[in-house]
Length: 98
Image 1 (spheres, rainbow, N blue to C red):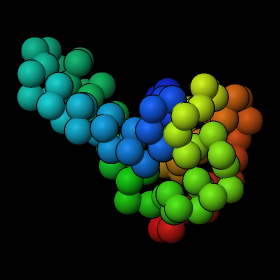
Image 2 (image 1 turned 90 degrees about the vertical axis):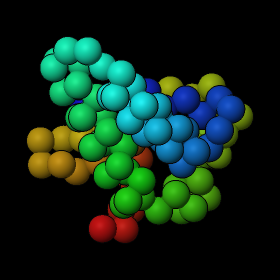
Image 3 (image 1 turned 180 degrees about the horizontal axis):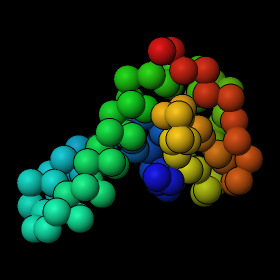
Image 4 (image 1 turned 180 degrees about the vertical axis):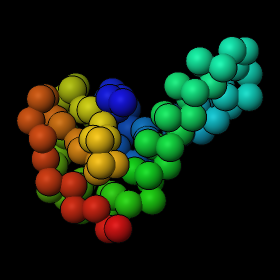
């Protein structure tokens, strides 16, 4: 799964938390199983990010993650479950805490 994380109005942590809360709300309104499965995957990815990223470190090292940025920020998980962030197509070091 590959999610766009908008840092135009909020920092990366706030936007991930907002998307997480929105996905949980949408899950309980979802009608079909395919939509629920997609939302479950999205919720799991966002929750993993919230639990493992050092957001202070990410914001300190990358100005585009602080907010007020038009950068193309993406969050994804690979086959092994490792999280990755790209900024304008370039992968950054995430320094996960777990």
